[in-house]
Image (cartoon, rainbow, N blue to C red; front, top):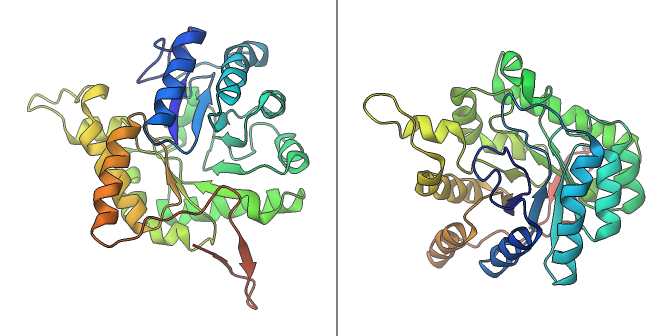
Length: 286
């Protein structure tokens, strides 16, 4: 999943693709570099970011979605608003990537259910302006797993098909650096939920902290690619369904090397199949 933020204030590429032509050109380049989906977001969710209104968000993403889908680029929409998701799906988006896991807008489940599209449920505890205050856990992996299970149950209760659901541990969202590393190290426990998992570590501040200079200065976002690639390969090797990255070419190259060692790359499409076991546990067919 290639990241395309059409925002003025996203933490890594804010303002670079606010122009329609620039956004569409970059989306095509992401596809050509190997992105299976180009994830278009019109509202920054960086820590501390203030919300924008739905009309502004829609005005940013819809023209880009229309142009990219017309060019044959598979698109997902990164939004937590049902109104924006519904318009994006009508414009050609194929997947809803909801950082709130359905919590920010209770109508999102209806939109996804009626569209029968894949829905990424990310672990989330609150909007960006307050997320730092919510990073308190007894056991971050067990707590995230339990809270994702609640979101899955809510989606199923609302009538969303199980084979449309994908989970995301939400690295950096109400998480400290230590929480992010713990989640990364224990991905199999999250995969035990039985749903495909999307992993998004690209250029995040905990990587900048890991690579900080001797004086404590964080590595700039554009210089975190090698670390991003490493997290992506490790996540796929652990069983992740997909990775969300800014530099698609570097990640696809690294995954090609990993696959060449004899480790088959996972290829579960967004409309993955699931089957129910006698004990009601789910197993993803890969």
